[in-house]
Amino acid sequence: MMDKDKQPGISFDGILLSKESFYRVPSMPDKLKIDLNFSMVLNSLNSSFSNELKTNLICLSNENEEVLKFEFTFVGIFSVVDGEENMDIKNFMEHNSPAIMFPYIREHITSVTQKSGINPILLPPINIIALTKNVENNI
Image (tube, rainbow, N blue to C red):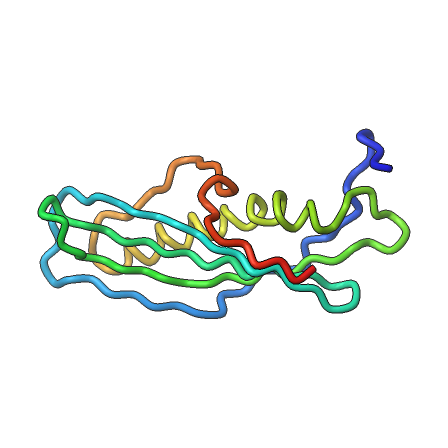
């Protein structure tokens, strides 16, 4: 039974970039239509849990030409703090882990697009759970 006055008893142990692909056309338009989506693969091994959060960012011109394509996967590593678990790990991994990882994703998109010589793409606060289209849960 979950005690709402206690922390979940789950530790965020780190995040790493595992895959990345980036492409942009040489001459970028000023206005871009942004299509952003996510998919997750949740895994567990002993008391360690991971969320492979794949991000796809596609930018289209006003003529619907693909002018930028950015795909990458971050892996978030989590673990249950022995004796302090206060939340179902499956529920945590499906709902809380993407929210914990999202600031890293937002910063990565801004940084890489800025370094590519275009106006940096700044993502607003979003409900990442609503945008996660595919969840493969191996927990």
